[in-house]
Image (cartoon, rainbow, N blue to C red):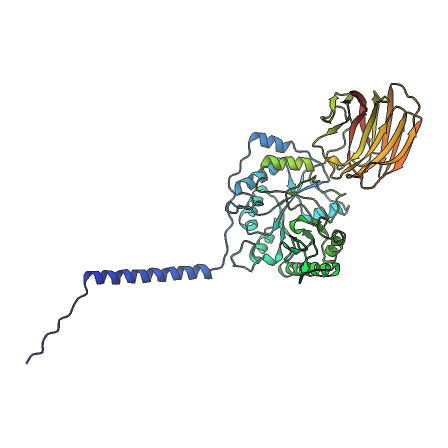
Length: 509
């Protein structure tokens, strides 16, 4: 007897479709897993990006070309990251950064190296271009490799990267910061040098009653403020770790340091830190240190032979720094040689009206009014002789001449010579402190015009009125440089003093 035939049921169309979809999803999922595995396991090694087109207009080019040159000085700039995706306040877009570099090239700037700066501040022979530039980049971000380096190559510029060395990663590791492989690549191309930005002190930490940079403040340890010796040991240990990194990666320690947050300790919670900082840095093997990480809020000077090696100044550049802003800051930082003739310069009045021509400067005021030079960097006005005549002095109006005035040189203070109808007074002012009289003498009645000669050498001034009277004084050494101002001190009513043929004599007289 034959066995009954078994019926084989074929899957329905819906089941077949479900199986097909499931298989496709599985294959797709497997492909995604494979791709992710490849992406994760492949070393992170981003390519360098070509510079974006950076065009500056004719007016900007002219402004760049007109920047003053002062041989023997170096303009130092500090940047951070350069990216179109990072919107931090310190990050420039690629286009803006390119425009900055284009403007610097149009101005005729040539970059120098750390060794040139070291020779300059050590008073050693060094050949500098007339427009010398030190480009620095703080933190050691990845964009130094991907974005900045190709732009430097385009303009034949060099740069210094100050590294927060604890943030540098091993080769192939994804990071916002540079890797050791990229560092070696930057060094190999000859465009880059490297300095320290600390090992791990670029942060904010708890100090008594606040948050503050840990390098420049005594911090809280287990709820108690650390001692000065503990501060010194903690900072020294960090700097030793940073120098260890440089020895391991480059075979030698770093010679230069950049303060985290630009803070030397002068505004910290312990004044003694600022005094101790140079010794700590020197003991760690550094020969110079730079400030100016943030936007300058006060005067910035180009680096010169007179610059203090532990507080070398830089112009801080931010995301909002336009090309015009950059050129203006550079102009303010570059010193101007003392001019021979003063009357024809662009004098501005402060509570005074200033009328100037080729031979005389007239100052009018009904109070204490001053004529001053605006936007002139006088940081190299050191030893000079000022000669002028004064007409219009009376018992109601005295002449006041300020020399070594710090408004254009980065310090606050001045030496003042007050010439009255029957007296001569020499006084000094430091910062916001009250004026201090250094010397005074009586003057014989002197007719309508008095001649005055003020000779400045180091911290001494020899003031001569006519041929019969003079005072010689020693003043505060903090007034080591600076320009001149002309003023009238009026006692009611409007009075005008005329300074005739004011001029400066530099060199030996």
